[in-house]
Length: 109
Image (cartoon, rainbow, N blue to C red):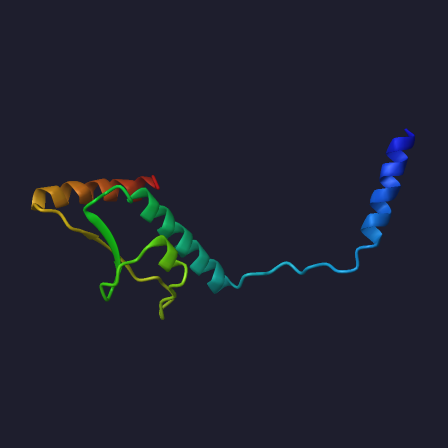
C-alpha cells in the first residue's frame, strides 16, 4: 500500500514539473489527401514489385519509386502516376493487366 502511494506521489510531482508540452502537428485537408495518396501508391508499388513487366512513371515518363513518391505533389492535387506494362507479347500484357485490375478491385495491396 505504501509503495502505491509513493508511486502515485512521484508520478504526480513528475507530471506537475513538466513545463513544456510539444504541440501536436495538425495536418490540413490537402496534406491529409497527399499523405493518403502517397501511402496508397507506395503500398501498390510494393505489392507489384515482383512483376517484372510493370513500371511506374509520371505523365512525362520519369520513373517513380517509393522513395521519390514522397516528394511528388501534382499541380492539380494528384500524384500523376502511370502504371505501364511492358510485355513481349500482347497476350502477356493482357494477363498482367487482368492481375493488376483484380489486385486494385479487391484492394489486395
